[in-house]
Image (cartoon, rainbow, N blue to C red; front, side, top):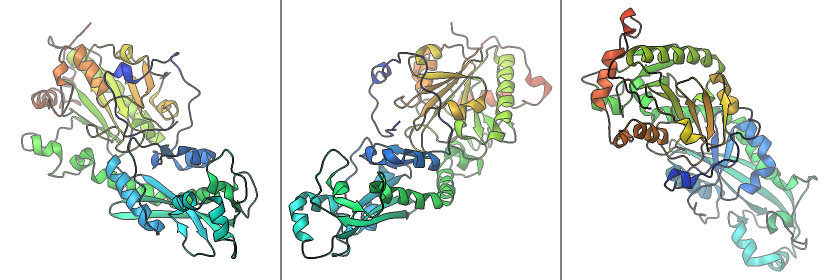
Length: 442
């Protein structure tokens, strides 16, 4: 599947996403590392390389905006410009590419201008250009990523010759059919892209490490955990409540969220920066299962209501929009609202254990996770679901629709009351009797 991280979402939501004919979808994909977006307006050119992209954990994405084609005779200058524009438009680092032809007889030409030159000259003009010289050439592909003020780039190429007399039929374009690679085989015309991706693969671990560091540096949770005075929470409540953490495990922290629309809401957040719950190391899931059971029991004891657990996970950093945090976390609220009824029109699967998220999530697109009050767990395809959509459902369900947007209703009083009520999590008296003012909606 292709992800479109910048596509506008029409309202209402039901008009944006067609109802599924069935509740399921094809067999789940094998999980890979956190996806890195490769932004291109022509995804077909990477279709033959789907297996390699999957191995690298790279998702081909069609942007919802026009990525300008910068005109220059230097590949790196074009790649630099394109990578920066894509980074600014998406709000997160991503991969871009640029390909072209280099004629041995005319060093560096046509290079990044290949498309325009081929359209201008046509087959006859190109034949005349090469009439009295060698037709030897190289087809090259450059892949780049703008990260922390630096262009990371990788190159692949294939040698061959240009034959403009070859008939042009259905295919990726005249250049790919005029170019005759030295190496035989049906996929020879894509070797330049394959080799560029293979070069990326040799550097992928270092790139992901740098991406993780960049994401952590810009993550509001990571800033808060590191004690940065500039974090959003510290600026709002840091003096009154230096830490809002009510419980901790080896891999997770639990605390009431900003945007607390009722008392009792919590976030279950990974200590380290991970994109979403589907991308956690296997060793985390037993800890997460225990924590979810313990959290459910505590909220039932305190508020007389089993909680909902939910997550809106992106396909890549920045994919959900500016209102959500791309750091793995579960929202937990002790409310009696049938959220699944609002989501069941989406393609979905039911899972048993949280470790199944890695295999049940849709390939290369955002997903929603929901655990109902009864403990049923669902994973939904969510490529077009608006940010904070489940919050909209829940706040409407409890009669407080004006509180759905966390930036517009910070809920600082509810946060402080939740902290006061649950900060004794590990003490015997934390298992209080159900409260009379527990939120219950039928």
